[in-house]
Length: 601
Ligand code: GLC
Image (cartoon, rainbow, N blue to C red):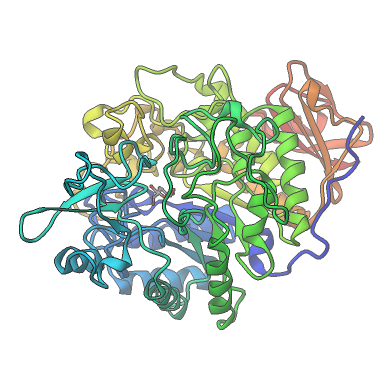
């Protein structure tokens, strides 16, 4: 029995972001404007016409701030400077101005959970010593004694593990050479966590927000938005650290929403999903984070133009995530339940229904995302034997994907995402159907997770490989905005990128690039981003079929094992399959691993 309808927000916000298609730029790998093999802001400027033509509404730039690049720029040494690798503040201003001229909004990344160890505050904290106000900006603690009563402080203050592997604490050597205090870093050693109990930290981050708002930024993607506040007393926790709340290892299959018992008993709040073995982690999704986002909401409200924030918060269930997008907090949160559902009709249908319902309960539109700079590209995940797995990187020794199958499913999944009401986030290169680079040599790897786990986690380099713009050029045209001799791209590109280069797909019927352009244009022409989802008669996730109506269109996605009929009275307007457009009008069946947009005859 099909579920007839899924609630939409009572009144859909009319702001630009409510139904925006946002394109994520990972600046290191998008386009190189100065020929040094590293992407930069001039490269972005040069490629804005491509993005305008793709039809997206906004770009989100991962960090381009001054940084020693210990974590690809998510280790910020100065929140108000552009790193010379990426250009200058003037380059940012020029890029933003040109984006605006072309009708594109610009979202910048804000990294408030931690700084770089090269940030002036951390340097001052090291110099100032224990008990100083400078140390109060971070989370410094004395160690526990190895030999009781000895005061040796040799043991970390608690047992927390870093998300990137290894302990979440590092011990200092004080300036006088003596073994010193410990500091907390949920991520790399070079990313000390800020102390959000300290009003000075709040003041500084408000000022950073204003700095970029004053320059014209339209919004912020808030990094690790669920992590800023830690439970008082920093109690031990026996779970294994992972970005996904309550999970205990690299694969989260056994901890999906629904199969995790609730151990938290706060009567007023939706329960946090936790593993059967562990209580909620003391460092993620603490209730205290919400006061921070209410404060920032007020800062953004001082500026015109519907400025926005989108939370990177890996929390579940969907009701907990919805708390980040209450009317006085952030505007959006990434819908990772949808991303984590994989290529599976029941899980996808459940994620769609649950996310829409949770978002509607707080009057916020949903977001839809399938890939980003932290996850294995969906064209590769969906080509694995189990297309619901969520590996933390893929290396040459791991199962290799079926590239053609993965791409077919990725195209089909994207057509689902782009047909859903709310806002869609695309990750650079997915519009070219790029696969993960699954055979990067260890010598090329840069992701700290690879090193901190001693290779047990391959890490995220495979989805961060520089984009191919022109097949026949060195580095597949990554540095083609530059006239002179260009250096090699900072990560090697696989041969499979050549035929997928933008210049090979441009104007080619059936190419992934043209499919994305057509799907975004259809979404806009039929106002799918502002619509509602109503499951149709054909909807049967248990036999692999998703089918919903949105506005005048019907979307049918076949994740099953047999082709499915096109409903009477409807014709295929757009198909994720590779066939030419002429064939589509005559299609009476939706093949396996294909999504179609249907319109009434
Ligand atoms: C977020 C970013 C990721 C980064 C981490 C630490 O998850 O998306 O790339 O490594 O935060 O800042």
